[in-house]
Amino acid sequence: MGDYVYRSYADLEALGQRVVEKAAEVTLWQDESYSQAQQDSINDFYKARTPVTPTENSHSTPPASGDPDDPENIKAYVRSDLVDLPRYFTAFSVPDPDSVNEVLTEPFYRTAGTLVPNLRLTRKYGGQLSADSLADSGPYVEPVGGMVKLILGNHMKHWEGDAAEKFHGYCLRHEEAASRQNQLALNLAEAIDAHLELRRRQLTDVWSIGEKTIQTLDALDAWCTRKKTTQNVLTVVGAIAAVLVVVSTDGAAAPVAAEGVQGLAAFLSTIPAPTPEPADISGATVQAVIQSMFDAIQRLRRRVDEQQETLRQVLIRMQADMRGKLPRMLVEPPSEFTGLANADVDTLRTTFYDR
Amino acid sequence: MGRTMGVTTVQFAADLNDLRIIGAIDLPMLEYAYAVVNNAVAGTASADADAFRTEPGGPPSLVADAWRELRDDLQNILGRTAENLHSAAQTMLHIVQAYAETDEAAATALREAWKGGDPPGTADGEWILPDQPPTVQIAPA
Image (cartoon, rainbow over all chains, first blue to last red):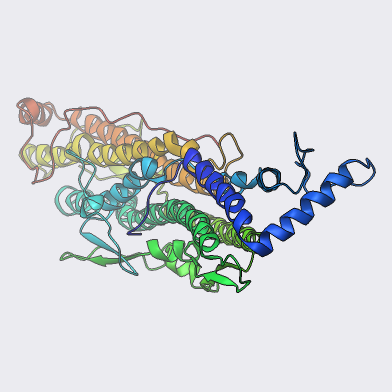
């Protein structure tokens, strides 16, 4: 996302406080809002004097001086009514996703590039993926397929006994297994990418809600009760789709398992695509605008939870798919070969090769 | 207990050399690669707390457990593969040793071939690793 900026807990709390201050300020000069707040303040003043009747504003306190409908007391009343508002913003607070991005994603892309080299990844719907992400894992690390070819093509020519053939098969299965392991590594990279992108977007969206609430409050007319609307859209709904990758080979073809582990995109294709959701901030009074803000925040929370649940379900299905293919992902050496670990030469001559 | 008739010492030594390359070079290189990526995946756990924390001090996200389990599965697949390759390499070296003990001349030729570093018969991409592979990390079940 081009306009992403990390917002800390303190940033979100400050934003919430700015909304509170703006609401208190506008209430004093917007006629309809002022009337409503004045009435609420008076009502709660009298309710507070009768213990059995709860006040609408649970944080309201009797004025220190003057009447409940004096302007300064109304301002204080509005502030107290919204004292919990900043928590609605800080509830979305998370550690900076970019602070853990490299530690979490790079090892999986490097693992994928080590297991099956010459792969190129691009984002399915645009966006950057570092070309370095598929660099191998450093010196002395050679691709699995290349090593298997050297073993079988160069060094096993004269060893043809039963155990030798089993060893031959063991080596071959590593190529197929590497392809599946590669896909699983890519799946994990995409999944964590999606999770971090979701976090970036939830921060962006809650910030936008706060700023647009302030903007809408500022736009209210002093005398007229015409509704003001500031358009807003939730971007979290596109978080998972934004990180999907497309794999292609570059030059030398990478081995592709006949029944491979499915990629993230394949799992998501069975889940209905979320539709973008408008979350406009609107109202003709301060109270209505603030309620609209709360509604937008609730919608954001629902969408975040839905995206997280989608990702969780996909991960569970990935795990079930992977475990169903485990024997072809974790290659065990054949017992006919491992049984020779302490064999004498006579046994070897009958099972490995008669040399 | 002698070597099969018709196979020359030179040919026998060459065949043993091939097997020793597999056991001392190729399989260890594969083991090394898998141990490296196993450790790389294991290393992502250091960021788990910050990756999945919600509100400060609050419970982790809905995704945390599912992602960690799948990460641990991959980590263990890579780690067990490295361990299996290590066992396979040791078995292969035993096979070489067992055969070499039947022919002193071939055994001597083999020792001479490996004296100076990379032996004959290795291709580009095959070399004796200078370092031990990193210790494999298996995530608990």
